[in-house]
Image (cartoon, rainbow, N blue to C red; front, top):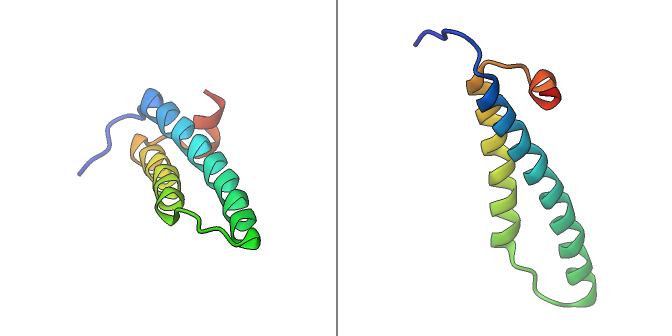
Length: 74
């Protein structure tokens, strides 16, 4: 598989997915810790979905051929 030229739009989409997934993962991790401390049962599936969203975004940035730092600045 040869890489032709960088695809900045795909890199931008991946960077947005990465930041969105990372922020929601950190937010839900805090909520899950709070729920565990108070004795409630958190939904671990939701944490897995947000973490997967973050990883898919990171994968899209890698596939686009644009470095992550440049994709975040687009």
